[in-house]
Image 1 (cartoon, rainbow, N blue to C red):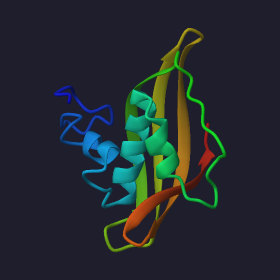
Image 2 (image 1 turned 180 degrees about the horizontal axis):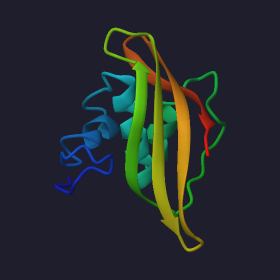
Image 3 (image 1 turned 45 degrees about the vertical axis):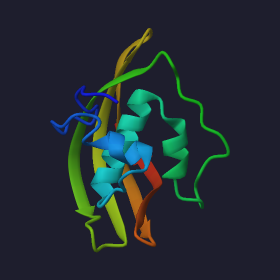
Image 4 (image 1 turned 120 degrees about the horizontal axis):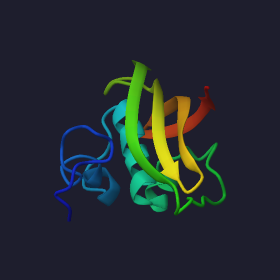
Length: 128
């Protein structure tokens, strides 16, 4: 296990934050928490978690992560709904990365759905 800072920048350690969700010892309680844990999964290369938390109706057949891309910062810009008692939610974020090609970011407005007490990523619209 790791006592390092969680990639989602919550201020908690990875083990006390997204690591619990990645191992299955906890589940996301809100759409934002799922989005943060998915960002962290990209950062640590956990494709199994990404696939498992992707809604079946929009899940890709396969998912390949770029091993040369390092995710280093997440800014949550806005959330709509997505609370513990909601069935849907929207999270707007910007995620920053570096690769041999240089630095960049991904701005996205993501939709989430909650089914049987579990949050899933539906899809997202990338911004500029």
